[in-house]
Image (tube, rainbow, N blue to C red; front, side):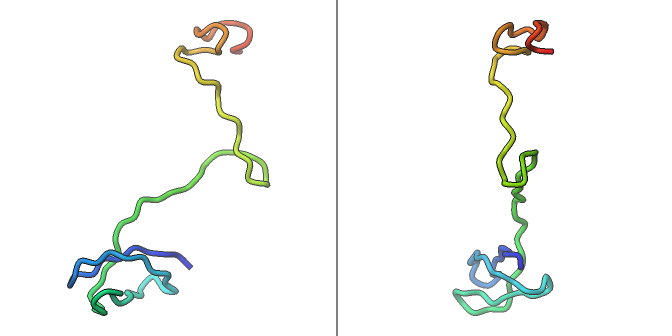
Length: 80
């Protein structure tokens, strides 16, 4: 059951609501109006690997150059 963000067209109140049907428009918690509409929300997700226990994959080493921390050029035996 997703939580959607809504905005009341009558009073301007923005609120979140757990809905059971995507067609359902809940009433405003402030003015009790049914004149509400869904807002576009930013989508958040985590992509990447890791094991089944939810551990993230290790990140790449930070460097200002294009290679490893040893050469910064991308052409030593450690970079390959």
